[in-house]
Length: 258
Ligand code: NAP
Image (tube, rainbow, N blue to C red):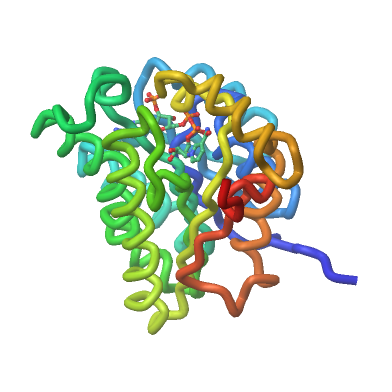
């Protein structure tokens, strides 16, 4: 029988906001598979919620990390070096764009809005991987980020976040090539729409979700638990031969032509 056993492995899961977060579903799967988990949250406002969630994951750590502040990324790396000494799993589930850039005209995206969205949602994956590299290369790690179909298709209102996801997916491939030489795998899950804090920031998200459910081969939306299970597969040894891959967890929506 094939089982996933992550006991003895250390997993850094970045970008937990609340119990709806896709990263929370992934963290639960990693914990159940036996990994020790460190959750990071963006700011003080989220701390009580994330600490409460972490209470369900025995032995987990909770640290603050705003990816626009290198000092907080350094602090996480220092703490994990001291407490764990290695990282076998890194999950990046972080995205942000100004509200006006997710409902106005894409053509009118401001310079600062474009920079912010790409910095937080794409550059951060690269930057965090860089800061964690000494920990990641100890035993050969598996990295995962979360993307969306707007990386490659035009999606109304997704605007600058589509640009960020395109850069993110290219980073997955480029990092896979570069870090493969150190035994590190890099993949992404491209998830269908799930109602989370970030998703609700997209203008018209609920009608987009209804449209997905009507058109997808499975005739329904996906759940965050399905994202968690696919992520666990990619992060585990079952996927030892897979890197640079974008795995669609979208009830098949992306295969449709009409
Ligand atoms: P979520 O729960 O709102 O998670 C997004 C996280 O990013 C939040 O914890 C958010 O914190 C964090 N973040 C924003 N700016 C940050 C910063 N400067 N430093 C550190 N963290 C920061 O929503 P989610 O839907 O699960 O999103 C997780 C990932 O999945 C995102 O990359 C998203 O694009 C992707 N995704 C989502 C869907 C979907 O339909 N839900 C589909 C495909 C892909 P704050 O709450 O403080 O901003």
